[in-house]
Image (tube, rainbow, N blue to C red):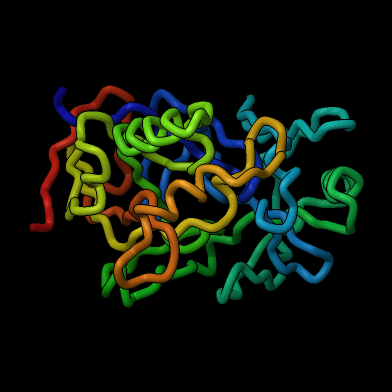
Amino acid sequence: MNPHIASLHIYPVKGARGIDLDSAAIGIEGLAAQGIGDREWMVTDRNYQFVSQRSHRRLALVGLAARERHLMLSIPGHDEIRIDLDRARTEAHDVVVWRSTVRGFDEGDDVANALSAFLGEPLRLVRFDPRMPRLCNPEYAGDSGAHTRYADGYPLLVIGAESLRELNGRLAGKGVDALPMNRFRPNIVVDGLEAFDEDHVDTLAIDGVVLRMVKPCIRCEVPAIDQMTAIAGEEPLLTLSAYRQHATLPGIHFGMNAIVAQGAGSSLATGADVQVEFSF
């Protein structure tokens, strides 16, 4: 099987459910569809410090959809909320995501109150202010100028489909049910590579777009959270910890963070062939 794009995904609100795509625009900041970018929105506390599934597992139950120039939020116990993509936004706040202080437009009390009631504390929803780009760590991205929105650190996460199959084979040997790819929240899933070959990829070329792998993805506790129920368990971290500890970075490695080296402004589609350049 030749390498190809198996699936594409965006997560417009950091920590909430993703949207599966047949095609997506690709820019320096990552994937987008229908005017909605990956991690373009983020839930924060009242002081505009980010929150995620690490502290608020039930964010996994917040559904998202794109419809008629609106981002639609389905928050359990609340009517569907429509966020107008074209509404004028002028006053941005300082917001903190990890070690970065960037800017975000507050989306107002209606969505804030719904999220607060569902998650049990005062929260806000902010939309990324592109007037203040958030540069990726130059230790890994170099002088590429790569930047991202509210993602943890890089605009794209790439995972090989065979890597999950190999993991699920190990889980089956322990009597554990297979896990879906959504546990790992990738943007691009590539099929046709050997298990964990993505660890050793330098670039992926897809219809004029070149992606450069820059940093292993060291996993937090989110892969242990069932994205349909928000219930956490031991797997897959227990199994991964036995054979996927990174050699130089502390933690479990699954997937590769990537930046756009060429072709920003183009698009990607599922099924597209992928030309792989390895780093060895």
